[in-house]
Image (tube, rainbow, N blue to C red):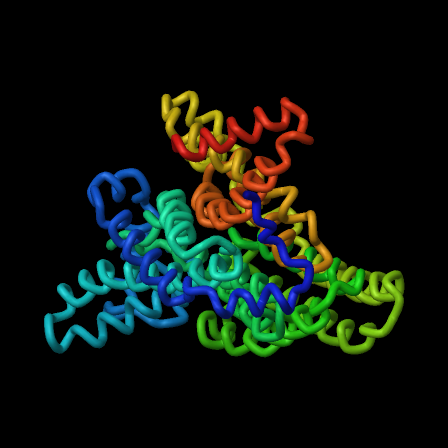
Length: 456
């Protein structure tokens, strides 16, 4: 017997979620327990797979801060010459918890042991935050009985292994916090209310302060929410206004806290500095004013009312900081590109995995593609009532596409795509129920996709 588990009314759906036995904290406990096992299992092999020079550079930056010549706002590293003294583009936001833990433990263990302990304990602590955000997102996706829900949660967690490995002890580069920032955006989208908008704004500021890697996903998220506002999707105005107001309020203090006055006035095209501060504040101001003044206007008025001032902000920023129009790698000359950047494996497409015989990674990417294909009909099938699913799908699909083009994004694809598994399984269930009316080719493709997911 087939049971229709879809709900036509959003309030009825939210009410049903409240009585489910699969609470956020139960999901969190299961996700975090499994994630810890995944992170700590074969720790040496994981470090060998993910560890890179950036971890060592981050360690140098933190250790230099504790030296006699160290300063919070001074990111120069005298031990590195290029031939000038190297100035790091990496955010102090990442350094902050390591510095705090080291200062806390130094009276007990001494400086050297304290800093080593900080490097080992903080990444697993961040994993708990990641697991909580995963639980918040999955809580609203699960529509099955509790036993089946737990099986789905466990499967999602295992599929996230390559993202979870970013939280192993000693993995002190910025990628783990970047994942947390983006997961905060996804959790805010899933809530789709004013508090969700605050989470979107918070995650956006975190990503901006850390690095530019998250910008494509932030752009997709805001493009989706802005489109929902323009076409008067329920709740979009409140979500967008709360997100923009949060960015407007948090960007200045974050700039003063992590880069100081000299950093705020500097132009660093590959790091949080004047160009990106201007963009963040300018675009956020446009959205706050627009959602306030245009809420009752027709869609085309909303579109023009946001597009014109936003274009003015972009044009003015480009004119004020023309060097950054060439991108974050403007300073890399052809010789450096040929002898360094082009030899970095993560700058290549997934074809690199095939060339290196890493066929298991290609198989895992194929599995993610299958989940995305199965999810698409569910994500866009009820877009006016559940717009957040479509935006989350778009972000996840962007991560997957960017991974195929440039493997440095693989950690984001494995963090986002598995979150779509509940929707993918729901679509597969509905397709199975309606198999008599579905063409044989479609049934075959769905069966093949499910098979690849199970095997992987």
